[in-house]
Image (tube, rainbow, N blue to C red):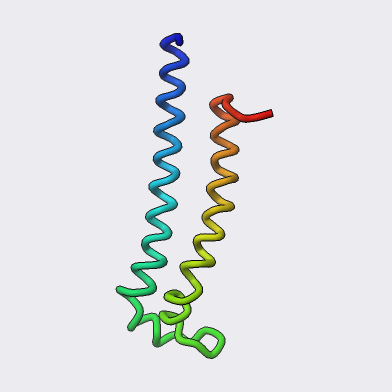
Length: 88
């Protein structure tokens, strides 16, 4: 494997980890932060008849996770094309 190819592989892996960590941080903030730590202040805001803190604890983290799956898929496809490791 040439040095240029090794450098590209390292750059690809770093970009992959950066994306993964950022998405996990978003999920952590929504599920733990909004659903547990900030539940009392968020409960002052109604959302469709429910308290917002309760909604984040019960539904918000799940919806966020589903959205993050699609974001991860789209961003990884972009990274794969950028580093020319995509599947045909």
